[in-house]
Image 1 (tube, one colour):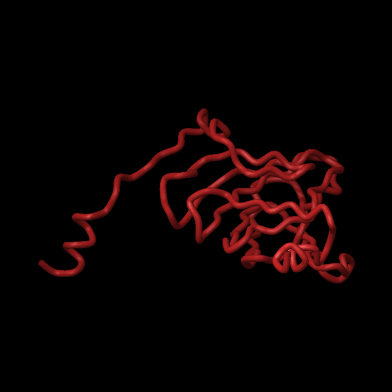
Image 2 (cartoon, rainbow, N blue to C red):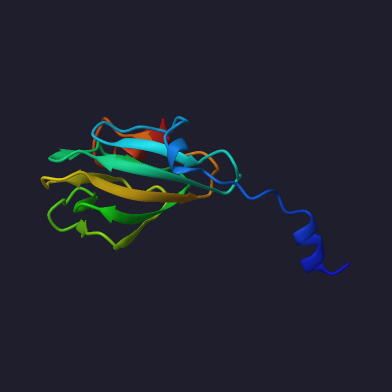
Length: 147
């Protein structure tokens, strides 16, 4: 048996999350954002969620542990801010834009606009969303690691 045949025969089932089922499971939350589960707990390596942000809101500073995060902007105009120098480290996203947030990167999401922001979030490295809120602010994950 070839390696491609062995891989295909040991593959798991295809999982579908219907639109009506988005948000039925729980995900890690951050103040200012609503995260809704979609494909969560179906794989050990990746998960997918939907993030909604009301107008004139922002998340707490947080990171996603060892998970790299891909963001796809569906609607609205939101921003990802990372690091302590918020003015210089801000990336604005409009519908159709993509972003990669590396594992452990401290950041927050902001919606300064007048309409709701909707982003599709895909995280690699875990089958469940990891959200580590940092109430101590920028750089506080380093103090958490040493304690």
